Length: 326
Ligand code: ADP
Image (cartoon, rainbow, N blue to C red; front, top):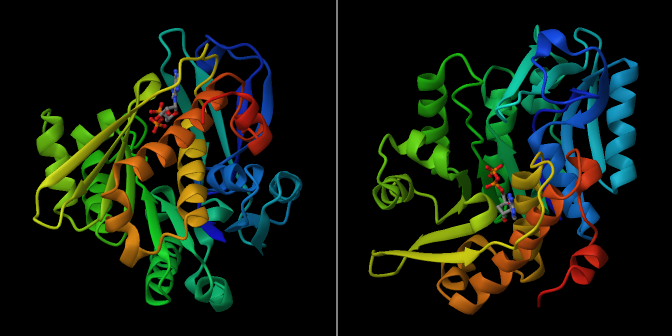
């Protein structure tokens, strides 16, 4: 099974998009948090999936638990009395940029502690996946890293999606340093194209990929929106091998959750192929394996963009198969 850990919050999304946050009159609530979306994506595809997080003792915490369970995720949510479930108000401006207003003072999800992790969940995990938000502050930072350490020790695969949005976070340089420090703790790291350049501090994509691989991850997966993705690894001889897998043409209406569903599909595919950290490099050196695995992930990402929202937009395996392709 796949274990995801990290932020879990309510996104309040405008009923009518295209307005600045200050002008939005009505919001609809939706489950949010990238690692939770990944867990839901895996479960929707039929994979065994678990999520670890923390909520407040409030109605929003109950809503999040219910949403994850309805998606088929086994959720282990600690409950705190000292903070409330995290909230974010989101709006999509006409230029396509998103405005966020976070209510984190701190929110419950950032209070997850390493001692609250169930050791058994890590002993048997095929994959552990984490992101950056829970790395922003203690105690969730230690809990997040402890999960990676335990998984690695038990022989599971570690996946990291830095998901850095410089415009969104006040201290971009600190976040970059933090993200760079953890790339080597993961076997697979997924980044967007812009994020790749931001992280590596160069506009030369090939050079950026080389720099991130040099941080010690086995595989770097760069998502390219409608263009699909690029899978970058080091050959045994030490040269960089890059395979581009084309995207699937669709009529996109809302890209929220596309990256997360893509990651969920990728991790599900790795587990189904029985790929362990020791076999990862060998498997990704095989072009047919990479093409099969990432054509599937691209398809899942593409379908997610054709529907609104994140978790409600995630496809089932039957829907992916009906969508066509191999
Ligand atoms: P992120 O920046 O969140 O990582 P992307 O927008 O690059 O995510 O999308 C992740 C994946 O979803 C892409 O690699 C692709 O497979 C799919 N995808 C995203 N946008 C589109 C689109 N407009 N058309 C087809 N596929 C898409």
